[in-house]
Length: 129
Image (cartoon, rainbow, N blue to C red; front, side, top):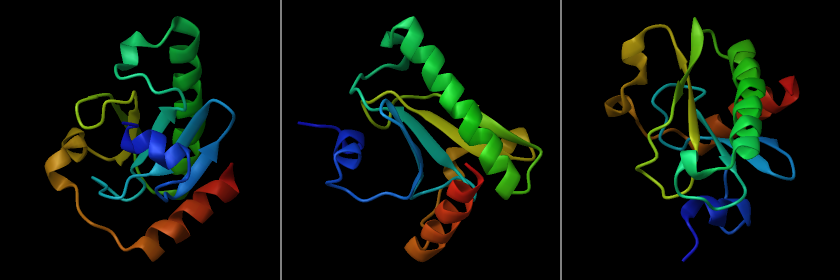
């Protein structure tokens, strides 16, 4: 069975895409810890981020860097935090979360967000790409 992320990549499940190329996809989290919380994933379904080969891991981080800069340009924050937990979905992914304090990386703060608000935010971030 394909992971939820593979289903998103294939278009079976909608998402608010903010970056995409032939190998990687970034989209807004539907249960963000903070406004602007995004996920960056490889299009290849690999469970554990450290099972990616060195080139793919480097590329994934470079995409995350590009996306983080655009998020920071749109969302007022001190930094864009990076979290790699890998337990939620068995598909390698990086969380990018706008933060002002280390406590902003607490997933207990995740909450539902209106889809129209996510769509508008995704459009604003894409325009910065």
